[in-house]
Amino acid sequence: MGYVISFEEANKIFADLQDEYEIWAPKRFVGMGRYSDTDLIKYDKVSTVEEIEYMDKSDFPAKEVLTPISESMFYFTEDEFIESKATNKKLLIFMRPCDIHAQHHQERIYLQNGGYADMYYKRMNEKVKIVMMECTVGWDTCYCISMGANKTEDYSMAVRFEDGQLRMDVKDEVFAPYFEEKEEISFQPEYVEKNQLTLDIPEIPNKEVLTKLKNHPMWQEYNKRCISCGACTIACSTCTCFTTTDIIYNENSNVGERKRTSASCQIKGFSDMAGGMSFRNTAGDRMRYKVLHKFHDYKERFKDYHMCVGCGRCIDRCPEFISIVAAVNKMSKAVDEIVAEENK
Ligand code: SF4
Ligand code: SF4
Image (cartoon, rainbow, N blue to C red; front, side, top):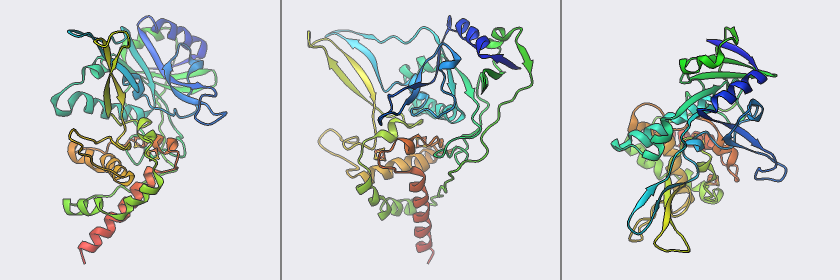
């Protein structure tokens, strides 16, 4: 059912919803961007529509609501432990279509991969209801259409922000009572139909070509350009890697907490193993790993679609102006060269 409501009416609905829900949405933090006089846009709890940044793309993805960059898993003493508590409330999250697709990848990795469900993710994921933020234009680093992530019907409600009012599609019956006596309209969200960026994802026909691609000189460019900061993966909508650390409290060394923190495959030492073994020792090796993971390995394993959703945040965040789209297009050219060489 479609409705049109004023910001004032929406704020009353928000107030009612907050008895049961935390409402999360992209929010602008003025002056907190990484360069002087720039803002940061990231997910945070909101209680009014005016707090939602709906004009610009968020620097960091919606995944942070469910998997914060750092979170406590449990607290321990020398002979027992207590699990950290999750919020008691349900979560209503405003997301763009690419972030909704990214959440499906997160669910697969955290809940299904290897037949094991990550309890910290599960307990949050079970609480989620999605409000899809209509996204009809995109930005200069988006390529969601190439990744098939520009459209979705997986939402409880969809919203179009207009000057002082919201048009909403309310699909989930749970939310129908909040809209009683509101003005009904015919409304279906629209989606971006053209991105400025497109990419050419190569089909890698066999393992021989894959091996040659892994050894192709194209990756060496990144030994000079990539500074291995990991900013691209922290901002990535679909990356899920984390590391764990035990924090021992100063006052009593038998007591502490275990935290998990987002980790990056782009940082030196990510693949260090016990015994001193280490893999992917150059920035180029690590870039190859990331690009192939997003645009080959994941799909090869799960047999449906690539991992990347084309949100472009990795491009936006890279301090060295490295574009994953340019990397994939170069990879495509390299595959063509390798296949042509094999067919000679
Ligand atoms: S690899 Fe880049 S474009 Fe793809 S999902 Fe991650 S941040 Fe978005
Ligand atoms: S690609 Fe860019 S953001 Fe990613 S690790 Fe390299 S320099 Fe950092």
